[in-house]
Amino acid sequence: MADYEIKNMIIDDGFDSEEYVTADFSYDMKDYSITFKKADLEVLNTWVFEENSSFPANLSDEMVESIREDIKRRI
Image 1 (tube, helix red, strand yellow):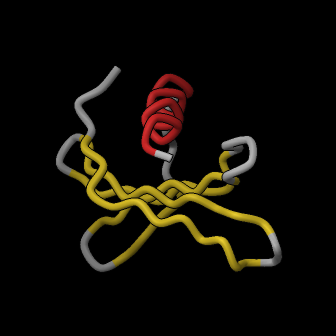
Image 2 (cartoon, rainbow, N blue to C red):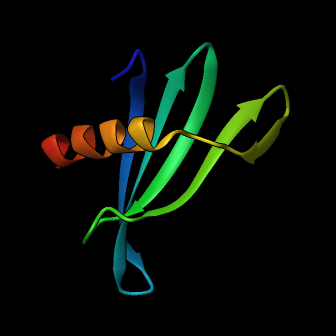
Image 3 (cartoon, one colour):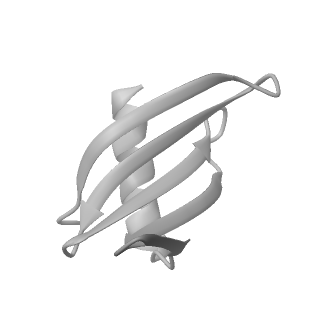
């Protein structure tokens, strides 16, 4: 898919006994964040950062799947 670039990835293994993976990435000249459950890479939330605010991001299924596959390769 895409012309996105993952800038940062954090694996949080201490939150409520479940592990989460958060990836910060840029796409279309905007910054985004997406968080997955590490066990099955189910999406928990997505954010887009604009100016001094953050909003829930509306990412296409194709974009989410592309990022999911990228994360699988990295972890």
